[in-house]
Structure formats: structure tokens, C-alpha cells
Length: 281
Length: 336
Image (cartoon, rainbow over all chains, first blue to last red; front, side, top):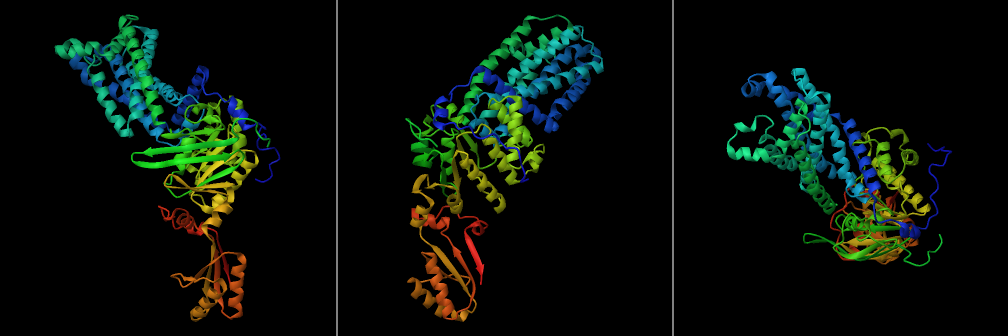
């Protein structure tokens, strides 16, 4: 339209570029970093809303796996399905949510190949913001996977003695741990050449962690060498902690170990990931 | 503009910039001085090192050697400060394909520290200014190449940066959209911005840039105003299609005597001769008319980028220009 009466944009302020340059800060404050990370998280949520098919894995997998494994393993391991559920639901919950966190790395790789990351890198924002934002937005995925797994359990007859408080606490613990682990996969996402190689490397890390744990079977049925790995595996501690919370044993030492493990993973992989990201940037 | 007191008055100053990828010296010792408030053009074929140079100045790549400053701030040591002074519009639109136009601009505005309300207001104003208001809520998948570029440029202007990098702003655009983009660049400069643009087209650099740097194989082959470059490059050529092929020997003889040089004969039968001035073209046409030689068509062709390169570097440009570009060149045709 040619007849625009209002001025399209306020006139450029008559600032001398040299003065602007002299005043420009070379640092990003912590407050600004947090705010920018949340803006990037908002972008992640918008993307999910635009492409809901991204949520297939976190909706279908919990429903399918919970249903399938309960009936496959239930009779063999616990004698019947009903007595397997209190043992199994926390296990499959951890397994499902952690598997979901692999997608973080894959999507980050795909995202970083897009032109928009050039713009992010050219903006005066904290270097960690695009990464932190992506990881922040992924918590919504963990929340969906957690909720669906638990609802499936309830439908099949799972009646946790820990009550609503225990169940919610277990869910939160698992989400926090998955978020911490996703930094590992984000690291692979940043250093890998392609999205499919991220998937490949991540699975090699993921399978021993989730299957060589007490998520599906009690650890005492395992041979000694495997049992000693399962006992130190942080995923086992997480599963045990989630079990304790849901059956009403309250917060146990395993919860502490799981949170400590999560903190260590973040402390190691967050700086590594940001460094690698900046080198590519 | 007031003259700035103290410090460097240059928008960009670079000394001995080098960037190597493996054993390829993409940028091989480039020196630059770009005046504040000017449009500066990088002219060169694909792979000449234009984009690599811009990416170093825009803090997206670290120089392997050399230094560069933007308004006096060092691009390597004070990258974050430099980033708050520049807007970068890449060769391929650097906007988020999965978001709408408004969402893109609001996101960038929020990242730049604008409040929610200010971000919305600025985005709406920019979309209006770039003729994207009607498409604001639509997904970018349905945007044309020109719309994407405009959105990309709008995103670069949110913070009203004093220096704007435009990497091949019109490559792949249709002629009409290209002219719109030229207008936009001119408006930016009228508003006081400094613009650094790269292009493969001589006419584009000529139309927009105050000064042009011809870049070839990572080095500065020549630097100057458009007029200076063209003067160094050579002259336009007059092309003549004769109505009767039988007139050719006579036409060749007249051209030789009027222009003092030997015309060449193109494969399609048209004659082509260098014309240093518009008058010499007129002289030739008048001479042909008085000899009673009917013409089928005439055209004037300005020096092409290939000729610029041939003259300035002694070798042809590495990448042949795509066929469609031939029509874009200053080819003024007149049917007789």
C-alpha cells in the first residue's frame, strides 16, 4: 500500500556510531543470559506448536512400551502383571524419559545446520542461550512422556502407595535427571557431523545405561560382574529413588545419588558443550 | 553528519586479514577502510572470499591472521561489543523457517533485550515497512525468496545497528524484487547507516556502492569508485545486426574508418565494436545511415564482470556466470 499516513518507524536516533561503539558493552550479564535462554526456550515451544509431529515419540512410545513390556515381562518376572506394576512403572518411566532426552542432541544438530543459527551467533547475546533454550524447551517433552507413562500405569491397575505427592516427586526427579543427561546428547549434537550420527552415538551410550540397570529386572538375578555395574549405574539409583517415592518409602539416599550424578553430568558436559558450540560458531 | 572527533572515523578498518580452510587461502591478506555512512561493495565471483571476509568482520569467523575493527572495536577481542553494532543479512535467509514472520522478529527483538510490548511494536512496524504485514502470521514455508530476504533484512534492523552487512542481497531474486531491494538499501543509507554489501554483479555494485573493492582469490584486485573501476576496465561495446548480410564488408570498412579499430563478428552474425564514448557510437550509426546500410537491431553492452576480471586480474573469473544473468546486465536493446 502506498498510502501509509503514520510514520512506519520512529526516525533513527541521531547517535554518533563512534559514541555508540565506545559505549557498547563486551559482556552479557547473568540476568540477561537467563532472560535470553528463556526467549530461546519460547522459540522451542513455538516450534513444537507448529510441528506437533515432533511429539510422536513422547506420546506413542510411553503408551506402547508401558503396555507391551508390562504384559511381556510381568508374568515371568513377578508372577503376574499386578505385582509387577509397582516395580516396573518407575523403571519404564526412567527408561522412556531418558530415551526422550536423546532427541535433544539430534534436534540441536538439525537446528544448528539452519541459517537462523548464523543470526543467533551474530547477535550480542550469551553464547549459551541457544543451547540452554533448546534444553529448556525439551522439558515439556519429558513432562508429556512422564504423564503418559504414569497414566498408562494407572489405567492398567497401578496403585502407588506413595500417593499423589510421591508420584509427582518421582516424576520431577526423573525430569530433572533427564534434563541433566540431555547435556551429554547436546554435546554429541554439537560435535557430530550429521543428525543421524548423533542418533547412533547416543544409542551406544543410552542402551548400556538404561538396560544394564534395575529398571526392568531385580539386580540380584544378574551375574556378579554385571550386578556390580548395575549397582553403580546412576540410572539404577534413579530408578530405585523413583520406586521408593512411588511406593511410599519417601526420599531415600538413592535420590541423593541420582541428583548428585545429575549435577556432575551438568558440571562436566555443560561447559564442554558450550566450548564446542563456540568453537564451531 | 558531524565529523567525529578523536578515534578512528572508519566504520570498518581491516589490516592483513587471512582465513584459510585446509590448504585453501580463502582470504589472503585483505586491507580495508570503510567510511562511516557509505555503501561499500565487495565485487567478485563465487569463491573469491567475499563471504568469508564478511563473516570475519561480523564475528562469525575468527581471522587466522590480521586485525579488524568495527567503529574502533576489535572483532576478535571485543566480539560481543561489535555484535551490538552490526546487523547481518546472510546469503541464505537466516530466519527461522518453523516460525511465522512476526514470531521471528519478536524472538530476535526479545533476544536483543526489548520488552514484550516494544518487541511487538517494533516487529509490526518493520513488517509494515517491508510490505510483509499481510503475511505476518503465515508460516515461512509459503514465503517467496524475495519475502524471505526482506524479512531477513528486517530482522537485521531491529536494533537499528549503525553498520549493516548484506551478503549477496539480490542473488536469486527476480528483477522486480531486486529493484525493491536496491531501494531498501538506498533508504538505509539515507537514514545514516553504513552498508557493506557483496555482489557478483557489476551493475549492482555500480548502482549502490560509493566505493567498490574487487576481490579475487582472497585478495583485493582493485579498489575505487564505480567510475574509476569502469574506466580501468575498458569500454562499452556497440553491437549491430545488419538487415542484409551482403552489406557486411562495407559495414566493416565504415566501422574501421570511424572507430579506428577492427570490429569483431559474433557467431550470430552481429558485428561488435568498442565505443569509448556515446558520440563515437553516434558517429558510426550516422556513417552507416549515410552509406544506406539498413540495420536490423542495435545494442550497447557495458563491460561485464568477466571483462572486469580479465582486465584487473589477467584471468577470467573462476565461475562462469549463470546464463540467466546475461539478461540482467546493462543490455539496452533498441529495435531499428
